[in-house]
Length: 67
Image 1: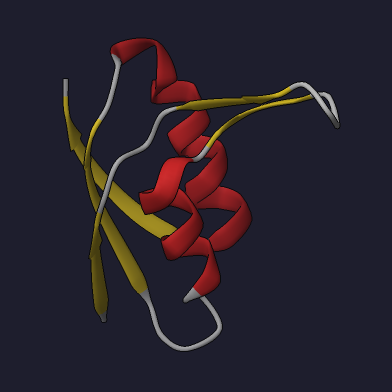
Image 2: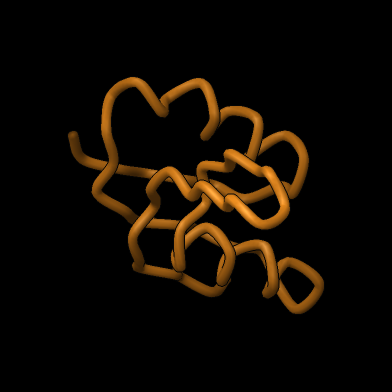
């Protein structure tokens, strides 16, 4: 298992309209999913909890966070 520690936050792009909740920690966790099982530790806002469930289901990433 690989443990990733990093920030998860809302990313907005104006050139190509996107509104994602990933941040550097979320992107690193997704990038490593082909190599091993991933656990993501992060500090996150409470309103992002639903997005973490989606991340876990889509990419098989375990996540734990403080808010």
